[in-house]
Length: 141
Ligand code: CMP
Image (tube, rainbow, N blue to C red):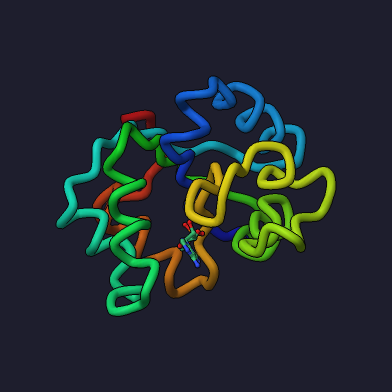
């Protein structure tokens, strides 16, 4: 069944001009881009987005990185979108980043990993609502 998920292109990927190639990879892999938004997170906003990681030892480093520059959010649609995007993005663990994945191409560190992808359908709904609001009808914002 067609479903939706969220991808964030993180500050390091934007700084190093990988946005166009990341979007090409997504489109060539069959994702439809329903919405695009550029964001400058506040510390509070990044903390809310990553609420599930609050209290972990890397939380402050993650928030600091996410507010260090703009992010681009993409609302994506495909069959089995969450799982398909996770495969395309690759592992969070640097040693396990499979060749051909976005993180294998562009991640520079454990926090500076180029992109974020929602990890479950429930988190995708939460993150889409947080970034785009409740209306997910196809339009560019
Ligand atoms: P992301 O997919 O955005 O979801 C949570 C983020 O936390 C993850 O990618 C990394 O950017 C970051 N992260 C996870 N583990 C660590 C860690 N040990 N140190 C720093 N950042 C981390």
